[in-house]
Amino acid sequence: MFRWAVICLIISLIAGGLGLTNISAFAKKLSIILFALFFLGFLALLGFAYLVAGAVSSSELLPAMVAVSV
Image (cartoon, rainbow, N blue to C red; front, side):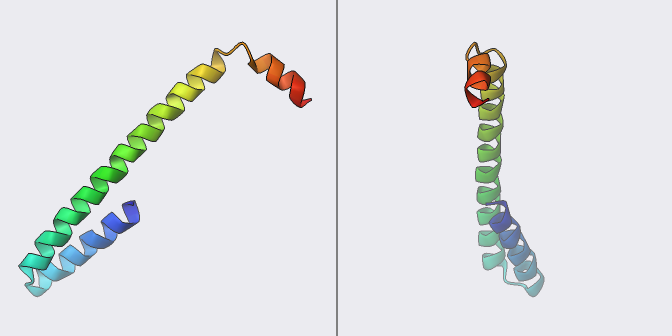
């Protein structure tokens, strides 16, 4: 997602430099939308990792899981 946001940003800059303002504006809006989706996904994954880390550190099943894996 981030990759496509950067590609759209580069297209927007090139189109703006060539005077293609409509294409530049569209690519800029698309880049912003893609970056926002990437950022929201990143925050969701970060929150999920925090919740999982909290659950694993306070879990009573952890010693049992270690004993089964040995």
